[in-house]
Length: 109
Image 1 (cartoon, rainbow, N blue to C red):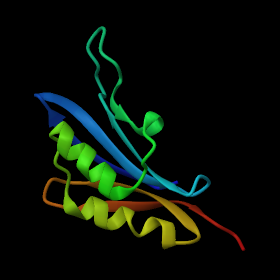
Image 2 (cartoon, rainbow, N blue to C red; image 1 turned 90 degrees about the vertical axis):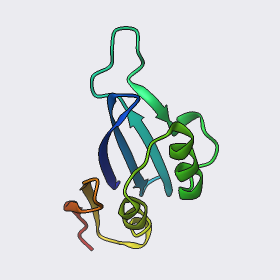
Image 3 (tube, one colour; image 1 turned 45 degrees about the vertical axis):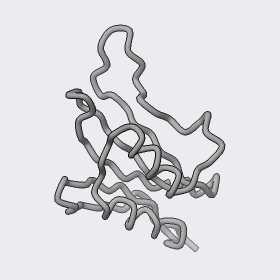
Image 4 (cartoon, rainbow, N blue to C red; image 1 turned 30 degrees about the horizontal axis):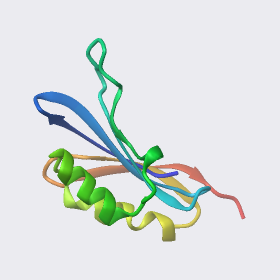
């Protein structure tokens, strides 16, 4: 599973956007979570588990609907994950589109 992280703010509160590719399920996923939810607040602003669509255009539209802007590089990089074999990665993005990436697992063939 790849995990692409971007930390930002939504209505003044910190949120973390996690976009990625689930290799076992063969589908993309999107989670927008609150790292510090207030009492009575849900941990998640959005989680795709109840959404029937799990494609990148749909997730881009969902983020726009929520008023969350992520670096373009985030979507460009996550598109590579289904065709990259042998490893999963964790990627963290900065506002300017810069990112750092680390391999999580190397497959043995």
